[in-house]
Image: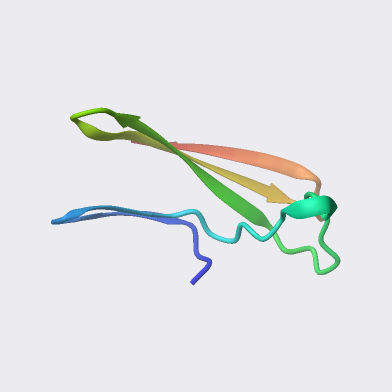
Length: 70
């Protein structure tokens, strides 16, 4: 659904990185000015998910943002 979010569930953690369409030769270029996002997951072997960082790029303002989520 391209909506950036982290959701704890009884059977695990759902990490939706959002829209990650900025790839390939065009890099972070977007004619429509759509923001791109990604999730960086930190995993500990045997323990599971430790933390997730959510990164977003807005091509209109040309700014990145980083949100740390535990």
